[in-house]
Image 1 (cartoon, rainbow, N blue to C red):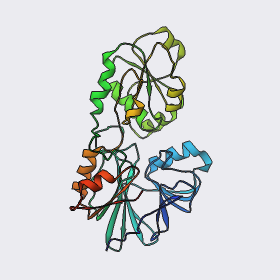
Image 2 (tube, helix red, strand yellow):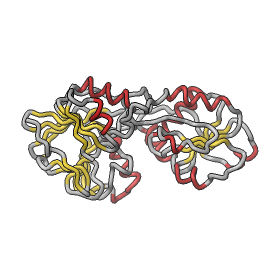
Image 3 (cartoon, one colour):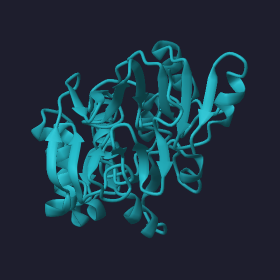
Image 4 (spheres, one colour):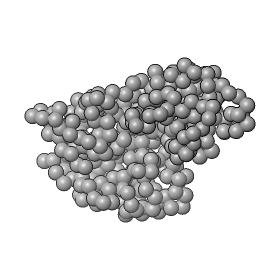
Length: 313
């Protein structure tokens, strides 16, 4: 029997009372299961942290000695238990080391996707479909009007101009994907990185991910070369230099509002769009779908009378 209270939303985060642990806790807790290392999912300071080895590395870089007291890194497909709940990580395809969390209790399988995408991305492990009784899916872009174009097609837009480009991208995950795409599809571009991105790039390379060529940002190079330079910066830098001259602005994101007033729109998302969510539901074959991190109302409407959809947030 599916337990409707297996996962509940609390001010601290998603809580599993049957295992007495949190999923992607927003505050330090005693037992913390972390899907991936983005700051809105991985908080430092917990007593016991369960995650992939890559996520542990990212967290220890970001939080240093405050990352967590005891880390329990797990491989994909390795099953472990917290109290009476069996847990197994599966690749989520979001960023390097990201994991779906399969939880089994009293014969019922609950699959928490965390953030995920199905699109090909050689900078992280590909998404793996896992059958479950309950699919707990992110719904960031759960809208029929949201159809993400191919990342390759989007990055090729940068070939339409020879001007220097200031490209906004999140320091962890998105930046590494962009570096690889630029090297593959815009080979005449000189890729330069903001200093805050470099440590994450090095960690990717330490784990065997080949991103291609890049250099640390050099103001003299950017200033003396008016063409073919791409400077990748994190969001805060991108927005603080909104009046930067002699550059074309672009921001890699699935959100339309982040494309406004930019010289080039760059719809590259690391989240599942509408079609990807439907495909996931079809292949997971759940008896129920629970939605998180977005608006699940369109899914509830779409599956009305065919599949139970519960909106958790």
